[in-house]
Length: 473
Image 1 (cartoon, rainbow, N blue to C red):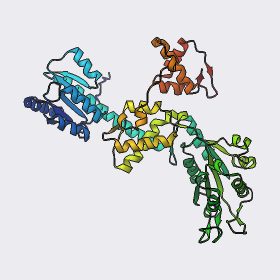
Image 2: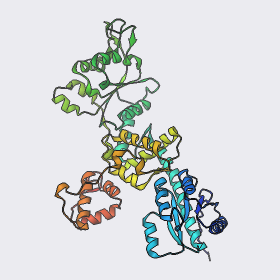
Image 3: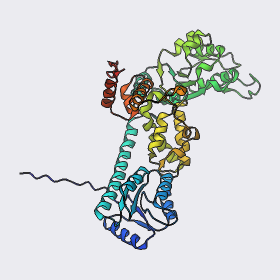
């Protein structure tokens, strides 16, 4: 007969340093001894400001606070500690415990509400629960770091189907391409994709030259790309090769190629067709061997129809085309991108920020991200500078995100609705935003896909299968 015993998983206690805040010296001494017997090294104090400094400096992540103290009561301390570090755990203690006061404390953010005299078993359970939570977060963070490494593609991170398709296509074309066109909104990371393609291509040992075509007028752009001879124009004091010669044997990346003029487009077409260039002011034709990657945020087909872009150049460039999705098309990648940028800017600024609070995460997921990944990186970069705790909170985000206001369901045509009607309208709007992708909609709504199907069935919404096998409205 085999006996089974339950195994208790004990979280490491050395990582958790409780602070005890009480104006009664006898209580401080007694609680310090009790907590020490439980395996925790506590910091006793009767000064609320000292306890707040410990929280702000990250020296303690758990505070046991007496509710009734002169100068600053437990509730005020709870509010100030939560503003200082949203990740801190606060346990309130009181001699006049009531159920209503306990519920009020929990609503205001307390981890627990203990009656005095303190029951040792309950206190130990509360401390062990917090220690286990921190150990869980530590292990989750280690897993996220490993996941980040596994999902990083030459400096680009993504786990959603849209980005995985980009990575897969980039791998396929990198070994065989001559010309590639990257299309997508500004800030989506087209240059990073271009660098990744070069790095995994057969010419990765040669140079990659980058040129932003929208940053220069035609004369300067021509000199930058093709080079010039001494005296060919005012200021040309010496002879210089252009980027095509500089990267001969390697890759040239032309960013914002849709901004070039028609005369410049004709010269680029000659490079692609004949693999030859002429320096400004020189009759000599030079042969080159480069791979060309171009990028644009414009609809080049529309530009061709409007007469702003050469049709023959468009077809030469777009023989292989990769579309980089906007950030709103890959919302599932935001948590991964946040971790990636936190790691980057923790190292750059000497910080040790673990993540974002829930309300900060909610704001990021609701934002429209017109600047795409570049905007998200700027937000995390500035938040890492201003954050003083271990977690980025709402107050650390840029002002325009903090002031974002919820819009009424129907604008000025607002009318009172039942909660059931509000739920139905909200689900339909999220589905429309996700283009019918129910898995993504369920993730955004914070519910399981099965629950979403149940709601839609209740609302009488018909379903059909999309090409990927998922149900859509």
